[in-house]
Picture 1 (cartoon, rainbow, N blue to C red):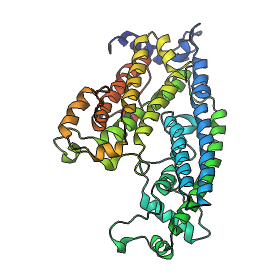
Picture 2: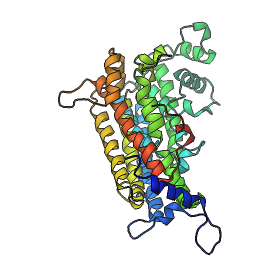
Picture 3: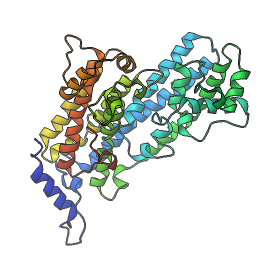
Amino acid sequence: MRFNYAVFSLAMLALAGCGGSSGGSGSVSDVCNDLTSAEFSCDTMLTDLVAEGVIPVVEDFETNLALLDTSVGDYCADISNSTKLEAAESAWVSVMAPLQQLNVMGFGPNADLENGLTSFYDWETANPINIDIAIAKSALFAEIDLPASDNEKDLVAIEYILFAPSVIQTDGESANENSNVKTWREQNTGENEVQQDRCDYAKLITADMVNRVATLKTSWQQFDLASVSSSKQVAANEVAQALFYVDTKTKDLKIKALLPQVDQDNDDAETFNASKVESQFAHISKEHIIENLKGLRVIYTANGNMGLDDYLVAAGQDQIATDMLSTLNAAITNAEAINDSLFNAVTNATDADTCFTITSTGLYDVDTESSDIDTLCALQENTKNFTDVLKFEMIPATSFTAPASADGDND
């Protein structure tokens, strides 16, 4: 299958590198625009990718953030009420679903370093110790509101506050404890005093995010994908590159990093590692993976409208278009077959040899209910099946380019 597109790909590369035929003007051919026919419109695809793919998910994100803000406020007003805490936790989970879908739509306003998705959720660099320091400063000093660092005022901070109530992080050395955290901890010895301060800090975060998501939505509503690049092909390429989130993040960091790998130079790679689980407090890492994959399906198909799948068909690559969806759906089905949390599955896992075997075959048995760890090991291979089609078939067949972050083959 990987050789089916060779002639087409070479032709597309030639077109992209030579002048067009419009009167010898020397203009460069626009591959996406050149595919336009009665059945496919590059303009419509670029419009649908934003209007039907991204914006509805951004709107869900905005709606769910407003609910989270309300739920956190209700809980903070009645800190001992476990029902209100559970409602706030549930609201946080609801916010994470569209956020995780948006992560695979990392182009346009979503990719803005100051106001894009990273400002709402930066799980890779978040540190509970630093979050405690920010909470302590906010509680101790009236002039201090929220810190400059995104990863101390984002949805990870909310997760920590809601799902690890009243916790204060320690590093095992009291002498190394941050002075502000120490003062804050020693001043708050009564029941719920620490959590009240943490909750009040959470209210600052959710209020800030409600304002910022409104800005994000407006940016998307005003965004014209076709006009921000030198050609329509380049604009479409921005969307294709965003799909690689599932390769470099979902597959490599959210799945593979948890599992033992055959590595003769690194003994640690041959063990299970629960410390790499994305959701360290709420333990919904499985759900995050599922939403990443579903979000990719949304943007690939423009939510059932004219998407990149239609581009492939217009380019004569019907089989690749089908394989993209079939391998993606297989990965979603695999992830959904995991019953418990990934944290529990990895924490209780011991059989690295069996995992080695399963990660090379992708086989698990739904009917006999394979263990969660076996099903997770299979997910590494089944996600790789999709990313292989993305990297080695779709990208060459369309003359798109992979992002620099995907240059190294970490499979």
